[in-house]
Structures are given as structure tokens and as C-alpha cells.
Amino acid sequence: MQRARLIAVTAGAVGVLVAVPAAAVDSGLGAPGIGDVYYPDYGNGGYDVSHYDLRLKYQPVSDQLEGTATILATAKQDLTRFHLDFALDVSAVQVNGQDAKYVASGGHELVVTPPSTLRAGRPMNVVVRYSGTPSKVKIDNLTPWQRTVDGAVAANEPEMAWWWFPSNDHPLDKATYDVSVAVPDGTKAISNGVLTRRTSQFGWTRFDWRVSQPQATYLATLAIGKFDMRFATTKSGLPMVTAYSDNLGSAAGAAKASVERTGEVIEWESGIFGPYPFDAAGGYVPQTNVRFALETQTRSFYSPAFFARGSNLYVVVHENAHQWFGDSVSVASWRDIWLNEGFATYAEWLWSEKQGEGTAQQLADFTYAFYPASSSFWKVKPGDPGKGKEFHESVYDRGALALQALRNTVGDAAFFRTLREWVAAKKYGNATITEFVALAEKVSGKQLDELFKTWLFTSGRPAARPAAHAAR
Ligand code: ZN
Image (cartoon, rainbow, N blue to C red; front, top):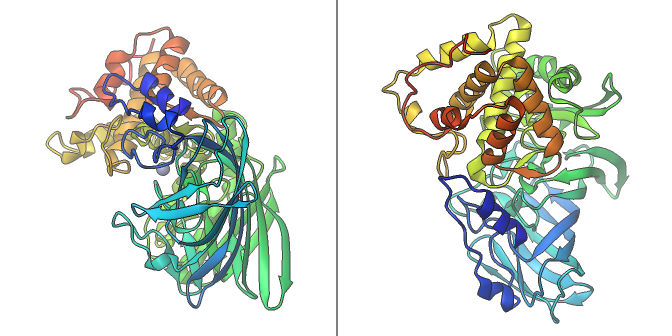
């Protein structure tokens, strides 16, 4: 509740306020959504999750996932009923040790009625037993669970959790995780964080993963299959886990030549953005046909397509920049996606500059010219791309142009100080574009409304490229 109101208050001038029905609060009904501007039914109201404990078993041959989720939460209001977001088949729900009634509704909502009212401020312990065939579940036309020749992958944005664990599915409600997955011997199960244990019994190997810093639900990942799994320690002492499908074929070398350099990339990014926010690092490359990468916390997912023609450090730079911009500092609403993609793309420009492959200014000039004024590229506003257009090129490329425009206007010192102050102030939290603009103005002492309006909130190509010599 409080958070939904927070979004409304901090929403920019272009904001659409999401009303949380007061009646729902009074009647003890937890709202079916947390108040996202684009996706009002994502996440839920009335409670706040602190920890997910998932104990799962997966059979690749049949794509059968089964297990138990134990969810630790706190009621934010008196609750006679609350929602979880989930799409697999549920066989039992308990709340605070007692059997609860439940019903699936509207595709991804699991509505739970505990036997007695949950009191505001009190702990909630919710146990959900479930099973299903995730690849067969289609909701809102989405089928993000990827089956592979020898396993499966859960990695998608903004929506993935529905297909593998019940949750309060929105970045506003972050939590820690223990994810324990049993798979047939010889198969591996990879998730986020640190591998705390690996055991084998009765033909099944169980992998236990722990996430000790707050993590958004869409950043939880799971990969099952035959992998070359590697354990290392970065120069600064971070445990690093990388994994490569045994079936990458001719891309295997380039994949390893890229992702094995994650430690080096993180050290370099720490020098620019400030301390790395998590206690583990790494990445994995499954055998999949999807063609994107995802900054799944501490363990980025990379499509092998990125390495089909050779090594690619830019994607490693991009996904790891998201560990600061997206994972530690998360969007308050999906409308704020520029805070993730604009910044991760700009990190690529900085890497290019460091490699001597083109300065950020050269890339800005190139990008501005690359898309002619008539191109539909310029129609999408990076600061408010619209539901379903969060990953439009404009959010990435024009998003990076906006940062180059800021850098040129405030100068390097204020620009990089703004980035560092941003990740420090919002560490493990949520943020809006409006808040970033306010911080950039505070650090630089300049009025920047016009600049951000031009680069983030206006449809059409700005009259001039970000000028290289404007900085004083
Ligand atoms: Zn990205």
C-alpha cells in the first residue's frame, strides 16, 4: 500500500496515478496489484516479502517441475485475503501453519484465504506446494520458460516468476532467497548467488543456492542442463560461478573468452560506479534459441547468439553494469526502465572509450546520425516508452544519448559524481526517473528539466546531437 502511494507521489509530470482502492484496505482484501503504471496487476498489495525458500525438483525429460515454496512476509494491513502471482498447479497452501483456501484466478493470480485474519505488522509464513509443466503454460500470450535439449532456462523480463515460483512479483518487493533444486545425476542446476551445498542421493543431485542481498523476482533465474561449471575468485575476492552448456558447438570458445572476463569487467565498473553491490558474480550461457541477455542477479544469462561470430565483451559490460543499475537500484515502475537500459548501454560506450574503439562522444554522434529523423526509432520516448516497449532500441540508444547530453552539460566531474551518488543513495532500493533528474540537478547545480524533456520525454529527433563542447 504505502509503496503504491509512493509511486503516485513521485510519478513525473507525465504520470498516470494508480489508485489503490481504499475499500480494499478497509475490508482486509489485499490488492491484486502493487500499483505499477504499465502493469497494474503485477505484484500484490497488503504484504511485503522478506525471503523466498524454494525446494524444487525438475525432470528435464518431461519438463516436470514440482516443489514447495516457503514465503516469509509481513502483513502491511489486516488481511482476510491476499494474492500471490503464480501460474503452475497448486496442491496445498498453508498460512502460519494452518491450511488455507486458495483459488487460481485471472491467469497469474493465486488468491489465498487464510482461516483467520492476518494482522497488520505481524509475520506471515506462507507455504505453497505445487507442480506443473512450465513450457505448457501460456499467459497473456507469454511462454518465457525455455526448454533446451537437456534442460530448461528461466530468464525473462519483465515477467518470469509466474512459471516457476509463487511471489509478490514486482521489483518493489525485493527479498533474499534460498533456492534448492534437485535434478537427475549428471545434470546441473544453476541459480543466483552462492552455491552453499551440492549433494547426491537416489540418482538425484541437489544444488543449493543462496542470495543474501535483496533481489527482485524477475532477476531470480534457474538453468538446468549439462553444463561446464566453473568456480573462481575475482581479484577483489568475490566468488565467481560461470557455466557453459556442453552443447554450444563452435560458439563455446568465444562464450568463455567473454564471460570468463566478468571479474575484470566488474573491477573496472566498480572504479566508475562504486563498490559492487553483491557477494557473488558470474554468468551462464545455455543452449537456447532466444536472442537476448539478462542481468539475472549475480549470474547474468547470455544467449549463445551473442558469441556466434566471436567474443563479445560489450554484452558482459552491459549485463554487469545492470548489477548496479537495475539489480541494486531497481525501477519503481516499469515505466522507469531507462534507469536500467540507458545506463547499461552507456557503460558499453565507456568500455569502448577505454578500449580505444571510439569515445562515448563518437558513439553519440554515430547513433544520432544512424537513425534518420524520419525513423520510427525517434517516436518512442525512452522516459516513457509505453507498456510492452520497455526494450525498444530507443530506451537503450537514445537512452545513452540522454546520458551523453547530461555529461556534456554538467561536465565529467559532476556527471560521474551523479552516477556514484545515485547508486549509493538508492542501493538495494527502488527509484524513479524523476528522482534521478532531481539528483543530477542537485549535484550539478543546474536546471536540467529542458535537457531531460528533450532527450527522454519528447517524441521525434531532437534538433541537435548532444554537443561535444557545451560543458564548462
Ligand atoms: Zn540491458
